[in-house]
Image (cartoon, rainbow, N blue to C red):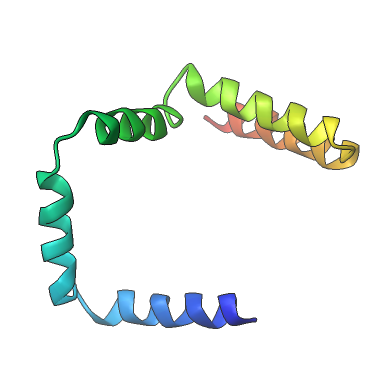
Length: 88
């Protein structure tokens, strides 16, 4: 319940306020950091959204769900994946 209320508050502020004053200072600070480990982490996280890593990531997620015993959920994930491929 608390997560839902928190999300609703964030949604309200995102629709009403363009940006907060601290947003720009945090953004500038983070963009100013140029260290090796941040670059590696950001490239790894960004890479999950592009081919071929996206397909592997989805496939491994479906396999993990199946292996932990959620067989029906794994089947539904497979059907959703096939449907999304058919739409794109």
